[in-house]
Amino acid sequence: MRLPLLAAALLASGCTMDREPATTSTELSPALASALVGRKAGAPTSCINLRDIRSTRIVDTSAIIYETSASRWYVNRPPSGCPGLRPERALVSRTPSTSLCSGDIVRIIDPPSPIEYGACGLGQFVPYSR
Image (tube, rainbow, N blue to C red; front, side, top):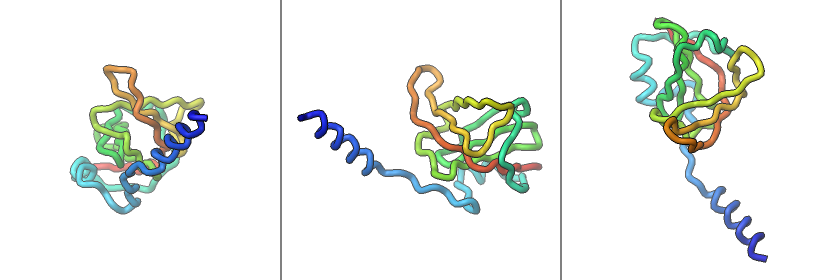
């Protein structure tokens, strides 16, 4: 009899978690705006080639930068937000194709340990060029 009560309590506590609101497509967080100084946004795209990604950087809870060259970066802001994103964490993605696309799921991990902090669905990739 205690198991259903425990399950109900866990579900209820999950529903009351504070979540950071998702950032709209026109708003940039201060950290993201600072990272993109001197760059101009292009038209969003659904996918980027995995082989073109040189590095990945988590800016804050609202944005991930995929660097494909010194002059071109792609910014992805998960449409539902992603409170587990932190600059000191890392991303793990699995995709059956050679591209990373909107709708793909990335897991958030702590690099020195096997701790996982959740997962996020990716949004559109917005190119930023110098």
